[in-house]
Amino acid sequence: MSEIQGQEPTPETQAVEGKPEPEQTKGSTWTLDAAVSEIEKLRKEAAKHRTAANAAEKAKAEAEAAALTEQGKYKELYEKAQAEAKATADKLAQVEHDQQRRDAAHAAGIPALWQRLQGETADELAEDAKALAALMQPAQPTPGQPGRQPTQPTPAPQGRNGLTPEERRAKARPTF
Image (cartoon, rainbow, N blue to C red; front, side, top):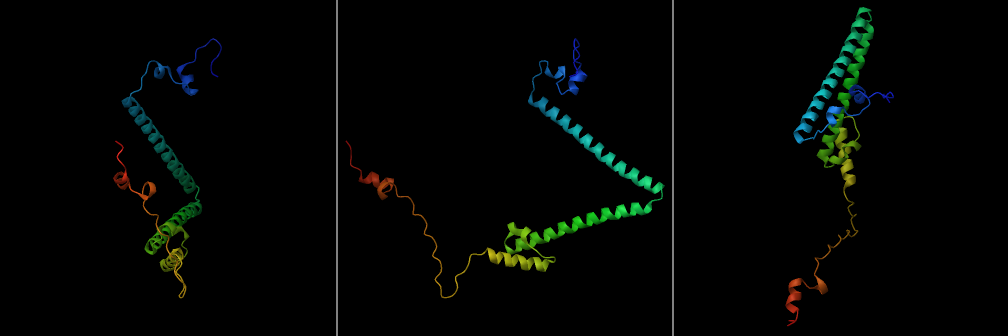
């Protein structure tokens, strides 16, 4: 792409095009220590970029707030702060409600079904959890009807012809 006829590509153009720089390819052998140090270097660089992005976002928000303050638009600032506070409060309320649902489901013995519980208060959630736990229990026979017989377990293997290896050896005829 960047190669013009008769010109060699420069390291800058190679790095831009995604090709390795010459220093990395000339007789380099990767060792575990070199790979670990390269990974650490890349992690630090990524952390630096994340920090810079967060700082830029915060600076942008502060600049926007300062601009609105200079223009005397306090009402917009107030409404924006109120919207953020409401969103945070709603998120906190949802997290607390989910925790109440988990607690009620765990107390009823059905922790895997906590998302199915419905109700606004802890008492309503507890009642719903008890009702759901009762539905999860196997059906009990009504009075006067015989109960269901449990399935008999499979007997242990007995070897060939119903004999254990020890019994077969005892019955075997000597061959010599």
